[in-house]
Image 1 (tube, rainbow, N blue to C red):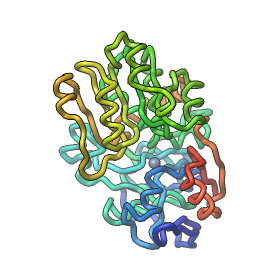
Image 2 (image 1 turned 90 degrees about the vertical axis):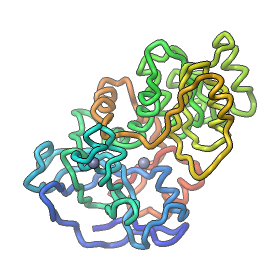
Image 3 (image 1 turned 45 degrees about the horizontal axis):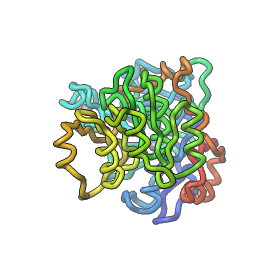
Image 4 (image 1 turned 180 degrees about the vertical axis):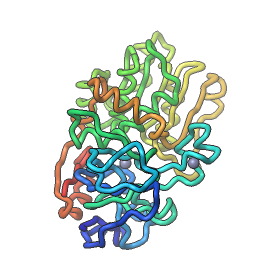
Length: 344
Ligand SMILES: [Zn+2]
Ligand SMILES: [Zn+2]
């Protein structure tokens, strides 16, 4: 089979590899029919997340089940399925609490030996452990390119809003309109937000947020704090989603959220950073951080997508063949694509 492998920082290529085979009772073998390139793949591409040369990358996928182990009950051979970006064991302390994203034995597809040594989905075949928990059948009528968002980007946008405890009638601001931020805009509106302020500096992304029903605010050409305050009688919004993941946006999030409001940081923070903790404390705010619990959300996300309340398809800006790995990664790296979908 063909597979996209990491070679060195800035270099990926298409390799010929042996087809994987079922080796454990909880595994399913999937023929991948569409896979996505994601922001986290860029961290690997640039060497910021260490992955062994020759490792197959990618973690967003849709395909058809070719074979299953004896313990796989929820999907069967021939089913069209989508995957979550990581696996969970279902039996550790974290899983029993429902915190699948903190599973003690969790493995992430396509992220090298440090994150579970699980070969990636940008390939023609994929071995899926814990298939009962990791895979879902694609609902009738849903396209491949929409379905592959459910187990990753849309699940993450949904988590950012759900994790903040957003309630129907709330006002929301979303900082950073990459794919996750745009999905958070949709999730907030689907969850009953009365107003969503969408903040970024890229015109095309602001326009997409506007089409989804948000009020776009240009980060530098407007003053987000003044616009948000003016629209909320000076209070600030109930919930702010930081979909960037840097101290600067987090500081802005704290300033945009109302007293006793919630800041939901879904962007990947790294290392140390300075934020006005005193202001957050004075305002009595709640800060909720971390990776998305997509396994816990995927059925609701699929139901909302099937009902037409969430629709990631406008985010797919490019379709490319698996063989064009180098071109696809170069294009994504230039930030000219929101989502590239690869097909065999
Ligand atoms: Zn992803
Ligand atoms: Zn677990």
